[in-house]
Length: 598
Image (cartoon, rainbow, N blue to C red; front, side, top):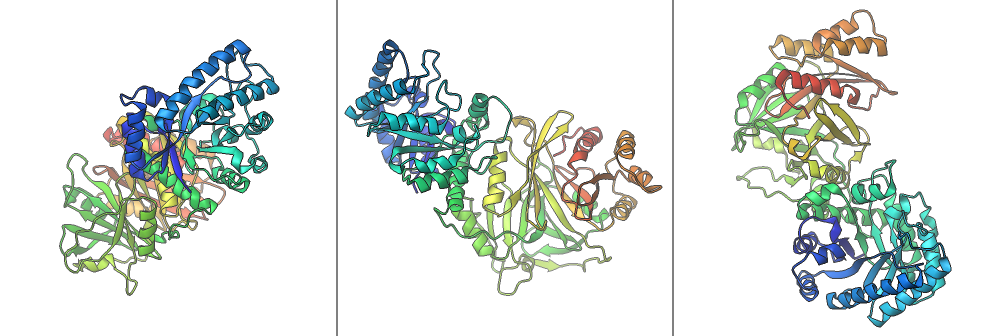
């Protein structure tokens, strides 16, 4: 099915928006009036530019406050409309969006609205234009799609149809099933937007918080299914007003937008990209650093052993149990210090996972391999993290371990260590994109967003995981655009006995993050503990949480560069990440280093 995007959804000049939409693979655009008015190009030049880029102009928008008006007001509105229709002829657009009136002059008179819309459609027909009438959720008298359709049906003009907008329909809680009663040929256009579920004024909600399908809380896919059953054959078009998108580079935003439509089409059965191949575990986490000594000291204190060295690159493999950490001293950037640069994901089908990623517009990473290097498939996440699809130890498939030469035997003490989860800090303007990427491309299930109080603002966090918890990734973003590089990433290591692990780490010279005594006083009020248990937690800086499924004990190392480690113990099926303790941890990190923890 054809895809389109409204220019209001992207930042920059009109030419920048058109270029971004074309490069992302859209078939058409909606030209927002303000973008045209601000452009130095004539309508004819814009039309030619779109043609050169392979874009059709699917909609010109919007015409406002034109129906159910006193005759004198309506006459003036028709004059404005005539000018717009003539402009559209020059532009090469044949459908105009007319929004339901919010004018204080509008009358609550459906018959008058239908009569005037019919006259408007007659004028539009003379110019080769169709009128798509849309109910704004805050319309003065017409604010629901079914009401708008009744007026269109009553007007009974071949050049008048309706425009359906998922935000206006779903934000009001309207039942979209009634869309199936509208003849498909009378649905002239479909605009799509998602949004987080917020309790606020619908106009402000619409103007500032829309997002692409799959990034919010609306059942956009369900609405599209109803529209398709009605017989709609036009484009799926995105109209997203969002403060973050308005400040972000148009190119990546357009790619994110198109990925959302590709995923939506798969959900409703309009497209069949390669099937998801959800990862089954964390093969490795790779740290890039200009100086291996500090992070090596931390790993050594945690009980990791340096067991192997890459055959052709300055990369060491540190291992404890099933937890593998690569330390790469090659392309490090000193301004970042140590950072988490790559993740190896165990995949049931590495090649299939890569095909799906590419089909959903994930950048495929070029691999410069020395002879004999494993031919690993890899893509880049929105934040730049490299994701490798791995098949460790599986015959007939490339194995990343084959690139390493053993230098020591791994230490075994019977502890079932593994990577419990990874925390990746996202650029401020790519948080929603990252959540959609990890769901659509990797097949991970997103959880609800959580706001965490930091001493200097609110941090936003959202976890994505496999159903069995074998892969857990926490996506975080700071309180402001300037904080992107200030927030840390971390690797959480699962152990069967966090108290013993914390003691061994401390005895090996590793400093644990000190937690204020006030936290433990509060903990004593919230939960009951065995004699001496809370004293142990206080001594080691261990934090505690409990949910309906079990308990969670965790503590933290100091930060090296932009990375710190967390020791965790999950008991009884605990599903969370200790979010209730995050404000205390963040404040403690500030106190230790003046560092904004991620």
